[in-house]
Length: 99
Image (cartoon, rainbow, N blue to C red):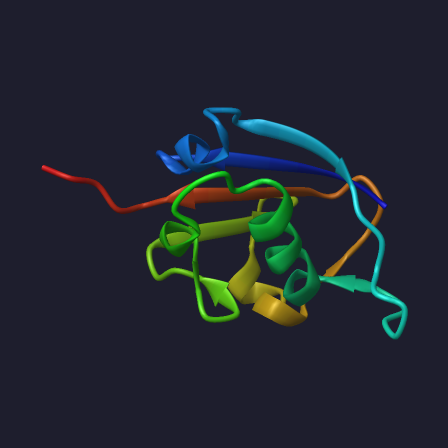
């Protein structure tokens, strides 16, 4: 399944400063559909190059990371249970800032 992932608000620094990633990822064998629950560990393993603890806490993203699936807050679509479809765009934006 082809997806576009975008990282902003400083999260791109965890991915070698690359903001946009066009990826191909398939659902796990026992899963019929790809969900965010499967995508997040895939991102941690395949895209995050340093400090994965800044992106994920447990099985989800860290507090302060806004997740949008096709411009819709994932909290409205089921968070980890959000089902992804071909050519979806998933955006991760850190809302935490130093100062």
